[in-house]
Length: 83
Image 1 (tube, rainbow, N blue to C red):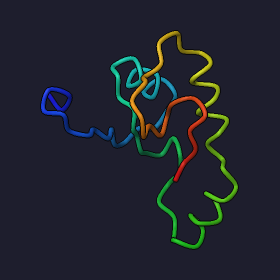
Image 2 (cartoon, rainbow, N blue to C red; image 1 turned 45 degrees about the horizontal axis):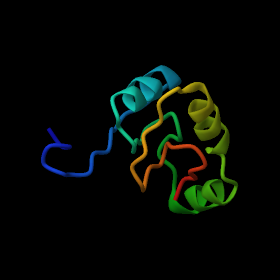
Image 3 (spheres, helix red, strand yellow; image 1 turned 180 degrees about the horizontal axis):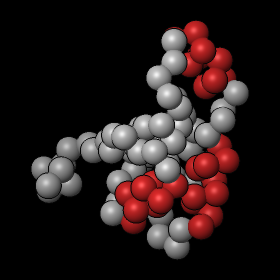
């Protein structure tokens, strides 16, 4: 429905690679959840993001998919980093 209304969609509560893969297959390009991190204080989050810990998840998921979402602004497409 969000695509039909031209709204951005963010899947919340993603906890594992199976869920991430399923969402990508459905065309979801932005996700958040424990797959990336548990809730953290701002200072710890800042340090974690500086270290770019999500590159491995993003690249490995992108490499294993035959069809990648092509929408811009994706936090889970190949080469994307957390921001």
